[in-house]
Image (tube, rainbow, N blue to C red; front, side, top):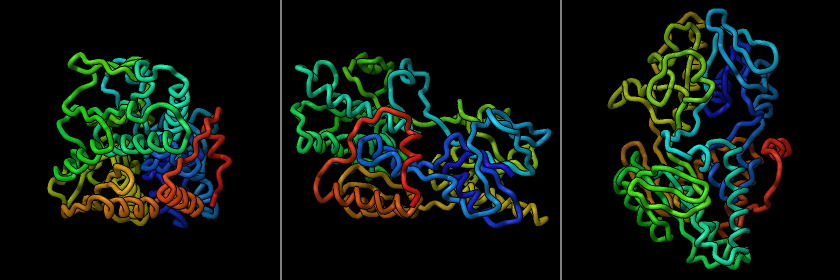
Length: 427
């Protein structure tokens, strides 16, 4: 069988199939798995790219029935059951799992794709980090950095990613002035968080959003809620009311879509945001042995939820659970048993705002804020981070930064992000 994509869903599916009577080939355009929830820390110079990436071959190196193919899938021949890649021989399959993830969604806003920094891949995070550090260096040498927009940072999107990036930006700028020797005035720095809805974190309880808004505001972040971005240029953002914000840095956290990814070119039925339509058991309609999971699929909540047909959010937990489920269905089919519908088990949602500030919302509505929520966020992310070395490095970096208020890694390295990852430890 073939698994297209090595994100949370693809790896979860492969792990369930380890040492089972099936030969598995994982195909991905990168040779590493990216821990997406910590990308914002790479983007704000808190962690190195290699700290949130782990080589796929190292995950399955000792498992005989799982192999890895580096490559980009170009098409699937559904009639002949063949997966084709840009390079190499086609891969024949009996079963296939499409776990190709999603990409940034720009809503057709002029200039958004060209002049903003999305945050969905390791390359995205690396590009934003290097840009941010260069802007700080330029601002330190500019006689009027405020007028040129060098000290204004705009974040578009009020979900967890937008909140986390905004909070992290405030902290890295505080550290830059306190410990980095920069001469510009910290009070001249402006961080603007923009969202078209009237509150942040709409998937959380209102009290969580209120706490988040108060905390961000207290840390000097300017909230513009109920405001739409109409266009983005190289040196400014224009809002729907005609206001222009001079800036050289726009972080795009406005949502994701399957359009433009591998899944969108497979000739399959698509639903909201381009997500592949699937049956209750996550199989692809009209294709025996084919499944779609994670961000790439319109995953139903399933039996036991308030609305079984409602679509799950595009979250890591959904990807992991749907990946495991698809793998189990393949094993059930091999043993001659019928498949079962997917059932999502809500384990809660969380977002960090910065040092000793986070919101963690548990399934039954219990909300934990502040330091307890922050500690819960730290602990959960360490548990799910792949690789013992990565866990130790990230924990050490977090501890050092908390105790010293010091900066993270800040060299601006010219080169490909794959170079950094390929030289990282394998733990």
